[in-house]
Length: 99
Image 1 (cartoon, rainbow, N blue to C red):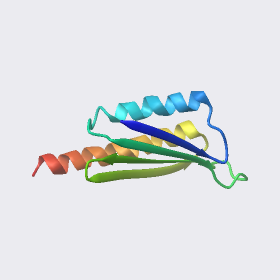
Image 2 (image 1 turned 60 degrees about the vertical axis):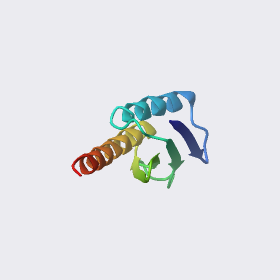
Image 3 (image 1 turned 30 degrees about the horizontal axis):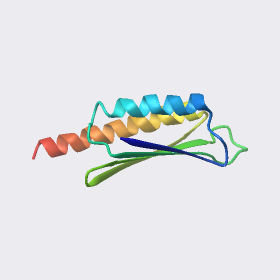
Image 4 (image 1 turned 90 degrees about the horizontal axis):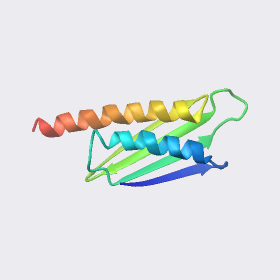
């Protein structure tokens, strides 16, 4: 699995990057054929409190999953985004195993 983290208009700390790595690694428990993971972090509308946006795109053979959340912190946004992707992956696996 190839992981790429892009922080737009700021520099992500190594602590944040290791947090993302840990959370993304958990997704491989649900689906082991993950090819590529792209994480985009950006600060939107600096004047509001919940302005940290995390977008994650996961590529597996023939399918892509995508989720995006905006929260008060990047850690919270990553947590919610990973949860949403977990649901998508589980739903996809149910569909393909029931065929």
